[in-house]
Length: 202
Image 1 (cartoon, rainbow, N blue to C red):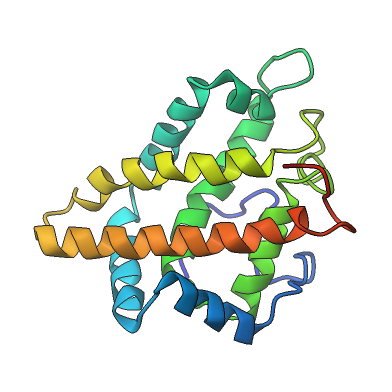
Image 2: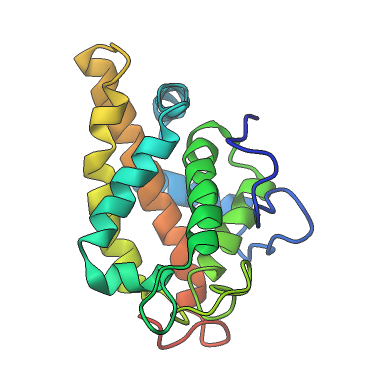
């Protein structure tokens, strides 16, 4: 599995440092059926990963540019005085790039499922600032995590079209990507829905 840098600060995929998911593989399979993720989608999400490999930096910069235009989102990467935290942005940006490849190219096994829980917790007050040892907003509201995926799903399409694939292939890659992200959002909602983990962070 390719990584976009070595090491990636705070990237704990497949290690004992990552959270353990409370969601079973059987429940993951049910979620795949719920979102309509098929064996064809598996093929096209891998194709999307091959297409996006080498474009991850530009894609993350596109998403961050959109975030910068929304101050209520941009504040989550700044300190309490509203100043940028360069090392936080750099480290989280590398992890964001790697997430693109992990979304497309990793097998959806227990390690993948565990890291979805880790990502989720890093949006909540339980782990948001702990990974990089910074002082910023305590959590990112679930409503914004869910809502911003619409921007991510729309803006990824030109990147999927960047390497000369047919219109049908682009559409199928885009569909597989959207389903995958929707499924991950469902997984990320788990700690927000737990009274023991991140209540009142909607």
